[in-house]
Length: 333
Image (tube, helix red, strand yellow):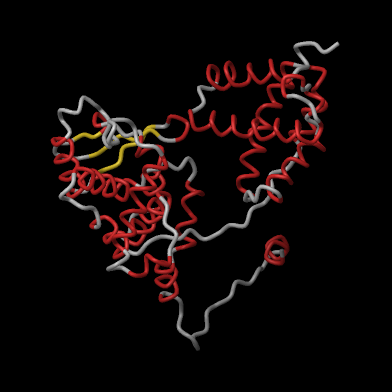
């Protein structure tokens, strides 16, 4: 007879409601990501083994099954390696809880936790040129209320380098005007950061907030129904601006631009302006400066500057010579 402790259902409820929501206070984005991972996993097991989700036991999620599921994500659903690793992270987090809640499953949990993260190709980030981003921001129709909203939104998106979830959730009360203009952003893991506003952005926001002062909302960029914009709504606004801008800036026709592309553009332009990489990490809300290094690798202008500082051809550059056995060993590695 199956006990409640070995069934997946009670463990999943504890995992989401108690562990993630109460103990870890995980962000809504994390909870949604983990939820989607388990919906896909349980549907996969149901399809392959004919076991209804409410009847599944921990033992039904064996290492073999999970590996087969991960292959299914890549080969059948066309997911990227990064997406595959995100799903694996959710499963591994769950099995850490399983090991504590169901001692009989410790060995299985250990095996699942040993499934390695798959190495993904490190692609260079693609950003827009200054002319391209300027054309996008200028494309909004300022004769319409929605155009004035979009203009302020796109300016803020570029100025702040905010994530899509941060910009759609932005409230007027998070924007501070004064001697210095800035906004408070709440990023991954509920981490708060402050981002300065350029005078042009601050002016656009002041004008826009004054226009919607009687809307009875604290949202910075409400929809026509006075609700929070969705990710799809944000992307629609961006694509509409790109379509208009591409008539004058034809290079945009050849590019796939997303809200995250604008974030990459902000980081790249800050780097090209001489802003220190550690400041850019704080600006973007990166937990580790290593994440920000991708912009150093991708920025051709920075590489060209470094190249210009190299010794010209024909000039002998002294080479390192190890005068110690240990140093010689290290140099030979």
